[in-house]
Figure 1 (cartoon, rainbow, N blue to C red):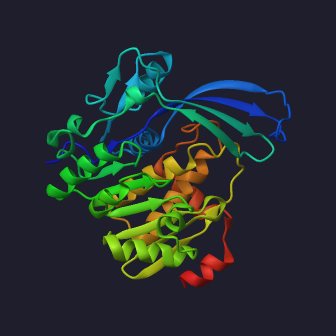
Figure 2: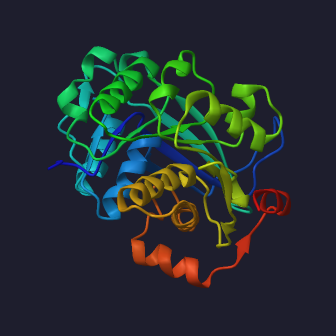
Length: 314
């Protein structure tokens, strides 16, 4: 029996949110309304989402020994996530981000920094850390370390999901071990130099053989290629307060759906709903909701479709 439904290896960050009435023009000035310290980070936030949804969850990564690192650890502990393989790096600042949130739209602009001392090395990923999972979720930042984790997962028959938003050096060595690729809207085109997103996803999937190749589309939902067919899921319309962490929560809900055996369309719809709900509150994890809340949104909410994506997916 596996000890964990999902194990995540990758980034965490502690954010400083700055709320402004509107984002200023270049070189302009704008008073901010509020300043909030809030935990976030790609994989860590996805794991919090999994835990809130009821999965047995473990996070593997590094944190600094400063206040921001303490905030991150307390957040993870508070949601019942196993952090026994989290390393606290001495005399190192935790990854941080300053996120300016435009209150008129809910959109955010991110400035971030990660100390080199937080790098996770492949030698620090042990087989027993990964082999206890039903599913492994990774990002691409410490590329060699996540490659090592994905290799261990493949050897143990554990499917791998990945969240990647930019092109990392050496990521071509990770992709052969990925079963579920879920990228930003920009990644497939940048990776393949194919401008058509449908053809770009198809190119990646055909080259590396992953089960699903998908991309998130922000306010327009998400697109996935599975078993030779494209699936499109429009976004759910909500009162957007802050888009910070929407993609991370999408990935957490995606992991949950894979573990629970949802169909591809159900997976995309549920992940969209969870991401939308997170946008209704401040912070990367401010609106992470329970399964029943996402299900209720799916039943009642208006959806925003991209007509071109919807037509081509049919």
